[in-house]
Length: 186
Image (cartoon, rainbow, N blue to C red; front, side, top):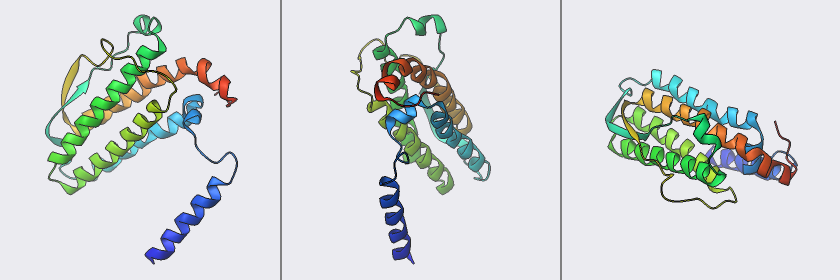
């Protein structure tokens, strides 16, 4: 049974990698708002699964998360490199916090939810890292933090990051990278 599943997955992988337009590339994420919205829906799935997971609401210890408020007037005056650094740093703070909570969790269901969230964050880190731009270090890194003690609050903050800074950053990138790669811009 396991052998046939593995064979099926391998077959699907081979077929999908040879069909034009079916491969998802990082550029597709940055240039297609619907692709970004689709990935954001994963957070809603985690919240729904959390409701079925008794005891998963309270985290074993507070998570230190970045403040995510975006001042529009300040945001427009930042360079793409500064925006990239802010998004990149915020994702890494989330990743480190979730990893720490997962390693301290004693509830199997909560651990599973945190693992899924960590994989999701890792996917975003990979997308941000895939951009052909130099990340500025220094004063644009995360400087303000909040402490969150519930998984629900962490998921809300993560969704705020995705729909706030990350989405604004993607819109700002659109003119710079999407036309260069002849990708449909939506």
